[in-house]
Length: 175
Ligand SMILES: [Zn+2]
Ligand SMILES: [Zn+2]
Image 1: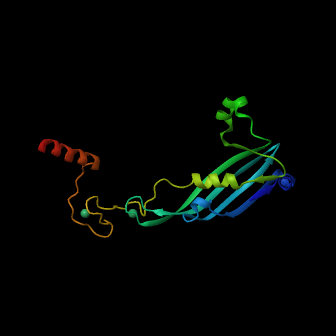
Image 2: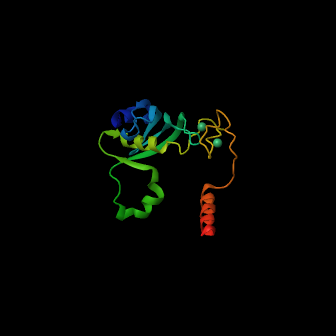
Image 3: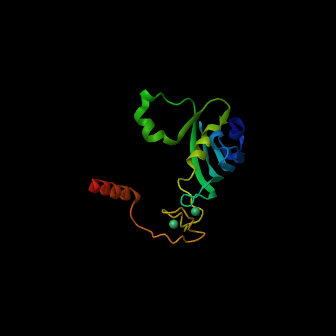
């Protein structure tokens, strides 16, 4: 998907609004759907400022009970695209780090946004998803889904790593 730069420049205020439906990146085809970006593009001098909101549905499994779970994700984004080519790293290494973190570049009459939006989509993937806020998860002893029924196992509050250590101690003592 791309923006026609001349068209944008000829608009009143150099501003246009867009709403695009996007396809999920190849690697995430089965896990992300209903991607919509709603944004404005504003042309000033030799740069274009993109500002808007991404929404999508992310399908995964609950981080506690591993039930299939989908979650609606919403993320704001903002990026400046300057006309020209990126500066050579060796010339402006320091400047690049400090200032240009959210600056991209475009050449010609079209601003191509596929790569940029792919990044926004991937960065919007949530780290941990729960089927519900208070999901009790699975019993660490028997694997029972505790949101369905309590299994009656005695819950030890011992860290499983410590447990291994305890077993190890036993072995040493036996010998
Ligand atoms: Zn859950
Ligand atoms: Zn149990």
